[in-house]
Amino acid sequence: MALDGVDLDVPGGAFVSVLGPSGSGKTTLLRCIAGFERPDAGTVTLRGRELVSPGRFVRAFERGIGIVPQEGALFPHLTVAQNIGFGLVEAPRRDRRARVGQLLELVGLAGLGGRRPDQLSGGQQQRVALARALAPEPALVLLDEPFSALDAQLRVGLREEVRELLRTLGSTAVLVTHDQAEAISLADHLVVMRGGRVVAAGEPREVYEHPVDADLARFLGEAMVIDGAVFREREDVHADCALGRLPVGHFHGGEGNCQVLIRPEQIVVTAPSRDDSAVARDSQVMGVVASLSYFGHDALLRVEVPGLSRPIVVRVAGRKAFHPGDQVVVSVTRSVATFPAATNSSSMH
Image (cartoon, rainbow, N blue to C red; front, side, top):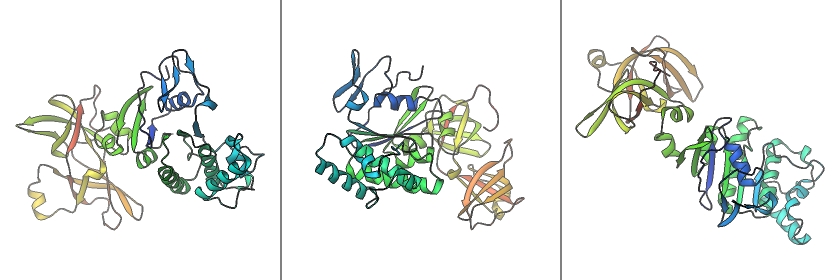
């Protein structure tokens, strides 16, 4: 079963990212919305118009949906202008020419309408594909991993341009991607799929900071999940783990053994002072720098902490001077999230 009980509402004018690993069902969901797949059951409604329901199936080209596929999929024998105007064949020639010119300007390709796709860069081809999708003024734009074939630097710049253009036009858009950074940075609303189901949906910050389970936490960015024990103390909830006694902000499951989620950005390392060697605060422990990866603007430290089988990963400013073998104080800032203990638990995952 590719999709299992998926229920999704996309607000008008929103940019929605559907994120998931390969095989999670995200592309099948997109194809069902577009009309390329016919679901066995369920409904698809666009602006109050039923596209799919029992006994009804509106064909793809009648749905008023624009699609930007992977790698553009432009018609190689047509010019840029002819590609953009492909969906405007029923419009008067003057109107079609004006609309194509407007879109060339919008996507930053003014003056290139006479070129062929093979005369354009990869980023320019994707801009043409977006313009072609927007030309008929669709009610919805679907983007199927449209930046995956581009190099990293171009991908980041182009996706921001596309997001701003869609926002300026007030377009409703659904992006399918397996790139976590892309999905989180672009979306007004983030949907995460796993095994054909929607496992989380909401504002990107909410989904990232309050994951529904440890697997989702690991999937969305870097995460350390370590064993611990959670307990209540009057109105407060704390977790005891190898990184100290930590306040719990999001508490899943009961008291007792648990998994503790800690993000690298919650961890601060400092050089020890005289007082640190004598006694540490509840949210501090001593550690030793095992290795360092320097990237200029920042660096990744791998710090060995007593009680953990593997080093923890900490991101620090590049100007901070740490070296392998240095003793450091490891502090956890902000509250953590806890989840029920794993069935086959290890000290760090």
